Structures are given as C-alpha cells and as structure tokens.
Length: 218
Length: 218
DNA sequence: TCACCCAGTTGTGTCGACAGTCTTCAGGTG
DNA sequence: CACCTGAAGACTGTCGACACAACTGGGTGA
Image 1 (cartoon, rainbow over the protein chains, first blue to last red):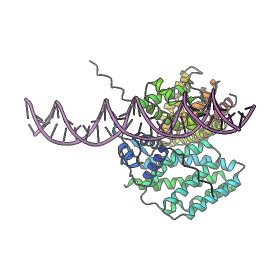
Image 2: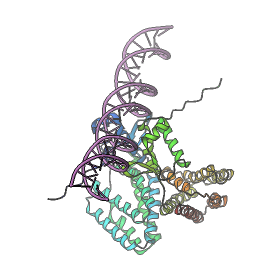
Image 3: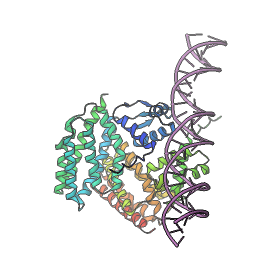
Image 4: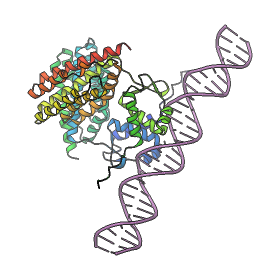
C-alpha cells in the first residue's frame, strides 16, 4: 500500500493568484481588460477580499495596473518599455554570466545550462512550453550565479517579460533557437567573459527589437 | 481668497503602508520582530484586512518575510545577501551610468546630479536624512537614464537596501562622503564610461563590505 | 515518572455586508 | 436648447465576525 500523497496546503489566495496569473498570461484576458473584483470573485468562487489580495500581488508583479478609480486593468507595454525591459535584463544576466564564469562551479554550470538548452529544443516551436523553457534557461543562468538577490530581481521582471512576449502576436521561432543561446553557454565554458556578455547583449537587443516591433502595431 | 488646498485622497491602506514602512525603517521594530495583524490593526485603528494588505505589500518589498504559520517578521539580511544586493545595484546603476553618458541630455544630468550631491552634503552626518539623500542621489542617477524599467527594478531593491543600512548599527559617515560620489559625476561629465563604472563598482563594493561586516556581529 | 490527551489561547484565513464615490442618464427648468 | 439636479447602477474601500490551525499548559492514567 503506497503512502498517501501529501495534501495541498496552499491558501486560497495563492490559488487565486495562480489562476489569475495564468488567465492573463494565457491570453484569456487581453491588455486593457478590466478586472473587476466582484466578477472574478464569483467566477473563482471565493470572496472579494481573497481576490483582492491576489490582484494586489499581480499589481506589484506589473501584470495589472490601476486605472481610473482604482480599477485594475491588464497591463501592456509600450515599445519603449519593452526595449528598456530587455536592457535591464541584459544588465542582470550580464552580472550572472560574470559570476558564473568566475565561480569554481563553472563546469557543473555549463552542464546544467546545456541540459536547459536541450529542454528548449525538445519543445515545439511556437508553443507556450517553449517560451517557458526559454525563460527557464535564463532564470537558471541567474540561479547558477549563486546570487539570490539577482534571482529575485530577475523574477520581479518576469511578469512584465511575459506581458511583452504575450503582446507579440507573431511569435517567431528563431527567437528561441538553439543558436541564440548556445553561444552564451559556449563562451561561459571557455571562460570568455567579454564574449559571453557580447553575445548576451546581442540576444537581448534582438529580442527587444522583435517584441518592440510587435507592440508597435496592435 | 485663496483656493482651498486639495484634499488628501490617499486610502487607509496607503497610509497604513507608509506608517508600517516608516516604523520598520525607523527602527521601531527590529529585525526578527513579529508583526501581528491584530496588534497592528488595534494600534493603527484600522481593520485587520487593511493592515493585512499593507503587510502583503511590505512582504513583496522584502521588508518582512513569512515565518512559521504565515506569521510575518521583520526581515534581516545575511552578510552574503548584503554583498549580493550591492552587486545587483552595481549592475543596475552601471547600466544607468552608460545610458546617461550616452544620452544627449548628459549636461543637464550632471547638473542635476551635482545638486543631489549638495543635498547630501547639506545633511548632518549620521542622520536618517543623509541616508535618504544618499539613496536619492542613486535613484536620481537611475531616473536620469530615462529607463523606467530600470527605475522600477532599482526601487524594488530599495526596501532591502534600507534594511541592510538599518542593520548597520554604526553608520560610518565616510560612506556618504562627497568624495565617494563626486568621482562618479565627474566621470559622467567627462563621458568616461569605463571610469564611471569602475568608480561606481568600487563604491558599491566598499559599501557592501561595510554593511556586510556590520551584519556579521549582531 | 512519563506519555498522552484535552481545553484554552493566539494567530492567520476567509467571508459577507455596509459605506462611499464616480458615472450615467432621465427629467425638469430657465 | 443648454444646464442643472437627482436617482440608479457599478465599482472599490473598509469593517467585524466566524472558522480553523498550531502552540501551550495542566491533568490523568499506566
């Protein structure tokens, strides 16, 4: 007789948060849509206060922003903001690259990054899972730096990144292609700080332009 | 007859948030202290729900973190986290420096930064106002980059920075001295990217060590 | 003596209700 | 016809109460 699976101890607030975040990131709510507390609480089957807390959390994540009379709306990013966002990402991941290369665990790190590369390649192009794998690669890079504050800062940007990606109706496969990411890992393996940073920078700039352009013609 | 001053339209939640943040950052609550919803709501004279929302906000700011049974406690940082924090700051402000130097408004920026420098010097050493002015200088640097996402990312770190500073019982005046910051502005004025970044990096490293050491012997 | 059980206390989690505000629109008034 | 006025509707802001889980301390039986 197998042991019982441990019970789900998450609070309603957490589950509501996940549900709302998922609904927004899956495109169920489009940028500009109004998220009413009453409507959401009835459809989720929880009280308004619980929904409210989840919405406030999403607000701090940057997925929704307050409009007139405190009413929350799904956020969207201007092309300029998209470019700015990827600049910040480049700065953060640049630090990550420097740290990874300078760390004694560089070998193990490259191995882990190559595995993440495989997981990207294993997903269908244009699928949400591929986006997830792509972001997971970059997050792993941050984690491998061993800098927990860096990881936190990056994760706080994640919501907005997903908004930017989501707004790009036409998701171009080349953006997640192996040859975009592999050179980064290669440079890390060789211990080439300048090279890794340059490749990363180029990747971010290209991505920024791609998503910024998509945001220009809604 | 002069026009009436516009009324304060802030919500109770915002005021509770400010009050709690101020209480923590002024040292009224020390790291590790338990922040009970009931206690706070009675002393602030608002309902638990309102306090609750403010606490959740502080949680996302990194000022408090959940302990056993979801009870919130005032956060403290380990020396390692302090060093990591300042590394991230260096990366972000490094980007800011690059952007400011590359922007056409570089002259106006240096003027503004020098004014901020004056405001630091105008405050008494070892005073909270001086810490405020110091942080304002760095925030201004980020703002002048024109990158709103950078500003946001920096501000999300601000809470934790203040925790780190607060934990350093002995605030050493040299940390906010003019000769710590002036070289940064000088290098920006000269358009010396590498120099500005190096000075900034040194400033951050020195600050990190200072605050990390203070955190080591509580 | 020690393990166990059982209130009592102290927290947070969640809810439903009331209050206040802004918008909208119909209707009256000059 | 333009404008002011009032009522209705749709929101969010705020509150108090109940439910529930975890720790605490003392009593009980072997």
